[in-house]
Length: 147
Image (tube, rainbow, N blue to C red; front, top):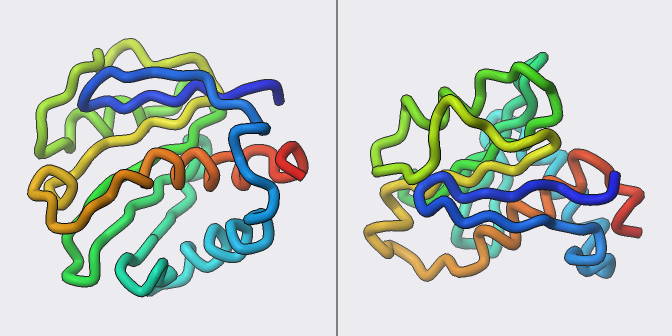
């Protein structure tokens, strides 16, 4: 896999993400976080956040970062399946304005980040979230590419 399309649906910001964008010294920590995010209670990150993921067969993975008060900060979808409805669902279920078209998803594979109310309220400083979703996406799609 050469690159992933990475878009923030609230702003429309887009960039191509390459494996070299992920620091491979964090590989094992990222792999553990990704795996544990599927646990019923998710995984605690940096003692300040909880990351929860779910697989949606035929569509991809959806991951949400929450603060410790269970306020969502950002939801990310990792999609490699043509015809997935996750793009539409991210738009129709958003509580915040979006800048992208719900009928025009990016080419697969893609990462779609949706900012949540906790991000807008600046409950915590969260500049790292897009980088984090990109790293988890590479662990999901092609972990060996970042080694």
